[in-house]
Image (cartoon, each protein chain N blue to C red):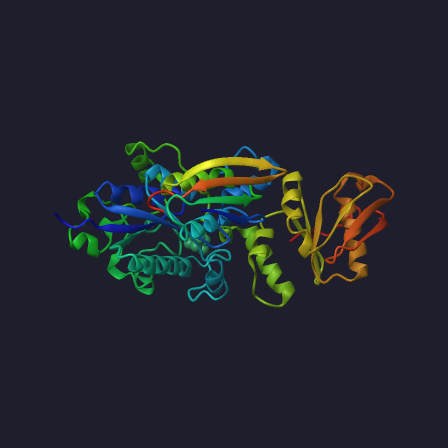
Length: 76
Length: 347
Ligand code: SF4
């Protein structure tokens, strides 16, 4: 399953907190696309994923907006 | 085999909680980190806003510390609940609007609830006796343990040897002999321990862990309460106090003036909530008006907006003003003379 999370106009660490809380509701293997405007998320969300065993599938930037796609890990 | 004991560690992102956690991890305890977001935290993004700080690392220090330690980190949004701590601290404030003792008690209580919900055994913090004037004194440390309900399940590895034995020590889950007896404001023992453990890259917060210890920030917060006639705030309010020049020419409104492109971009995100203006005949900052300005006030704000742009020496500057419903109008104004701005307008 792939889900989306709108974390635009939020400052770090709010996008990380929202990502964390959304991932709690997902199952291992599920994917989440996170939309942010705070570029700090480009560092913070991958760091959060490394710590908690999730995989970053893609990071991209369009018109000042950042999209990060992650896959929930086995212990998600 | 003996049971695997588990501890939850309060991770601020600074050196002390990093060291405290490492001492316990090295004793074979399973540790997970917890970090609280109050809205006042000094975070990577605060640096990311201003141009001059572009080169500072934009990392979240708590996440970074957890990664160094190889532990999980849970970041918890306590913005709403924390208001009561800031607005009504039972033990009062420190030098500025920092309610450190209540804050610590609250965070340890939240950690205790987290620990109980997940069947963890104890809590660790990086506190050091005598390090902070109010929250980390020999006589206030038991207050935190008691008011949080953590009691003897609260272990401070960096100064445990000079405090009464806690449950993890009594039960032999951790070896008290390997804990420390640091005290006072001297940071040398922590730096020596960091070197001994091979840790070289860590954040060194100058003051406390949050903006409430900052004098000019506290002053802006007090001004906000005075102007609204009410001690309250929301997340946007306290975020906006971190950026821009704040100028209050009259009690009923203030201007928030971006100081560079980074801040202007940040303020743009708040445009819809505020009357805002910028010089359109010249380049200049984005300015938000907070409060209830009337048309006279808007005229004055436009003159001030012109003063902070490239047209400050010009005869006339056109300022474009947007109200909250998205209506736009232009005013042609004489820029306010810099030397005529009274010092006490700057909040
Ligand atoms: S500095 Fe701020 S976050 Fe740290 S204990 Fe004091 S009030 Fe709490």
